[in-house]
Image (tube, rainbow, N blue to C red; front, side, top):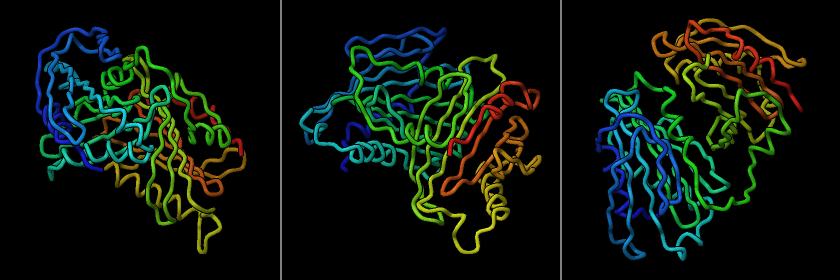
Length: 341
């Protein structure tokens, strides 16, 4: 799908912009129909450009916090003609989001770390995470298409401050004002209800994505809670379900121990972490593997349990700091997991 030049210009603005800020405040833009927790009242700018659909204006709200955990916070919105957005399928909307980020994040030093599908009040959204390898900057952006309006939220932070609570405080404080919920068919919700149950400390985000594996194209369903309070014992609580196109345990030459060994190797390589320990675990007769990793040079401990059930790989994960390892919240999260299959 063609990406408009005005959207391309927008990304240049949010990546390079810098502003001053002090204390946090809830910002409300009536015309934009949203509220969000900015560190201070943002600077507002507008940019108009020509597209195939006439002139389109981007309204942007920007702040920077030089002495805080994050470098900048940004919200923008663009109103497209309804004659355009009414023709878009969910696949087309994802294509619009993808095109925007790939067109603008095109430096060889920028690495795409992950893409997650999400929604707000049933309206389609997608989150992208990048890393600027040369400058050691982490960048997260969320796109939402609400009727004919596209919202774009973004946060930049230094690599050493990644996973700080301020990122999620900002992104998750975003709320729509005067917008009706849209009924959608959330496959990941239906799937989780049939596969497992688990208790998160607070309401978890639900995401889904598609990936290629040695067994064919597979779907990943994720439930994720990232605490917003600094006094929480843990950094991330997560469960993910990898849905393979077939029951991999019945494929020729499949060996469970070998599969789990590969899971560990891929995790260590992908996260550039070091193995602390591994052991077999069992839940309701299902054999799995429990792994602990040292991440980010020993600053973070990751505990993960992985199980194979039919065509599903189910992984539970908690991130914490070494001094909080094996805390009650972590252990209660793992203990609350139950298979429903």
